[in-house]
Length: 99
Image (tube, rainbow, N blue to C red; front, side, top):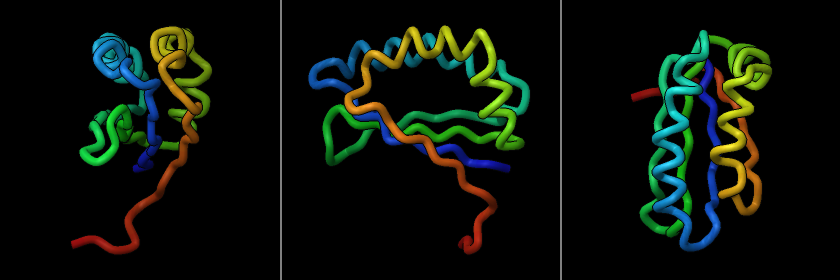
């Protein structure tokens, strides 16, 4: 399993609109083959910051399957204008330690 991670910094004051847009956009990514699950969590210390975590079967399910799809174009149109700055996205492999 691959874990996608991104810190989403939202333009000040736009978090309520971002949250509504994210709820509408979730089915777009969830419908992608290889998507195991997605969650978006608000930061408790920093207003207007969210943690995006997506679990994928393979890296290519995200980088090729989702990003190469029409669903990604719709995702981008609904969400990308909220980000400031644009987030970096990283992918992580299996845990090396776990309790």
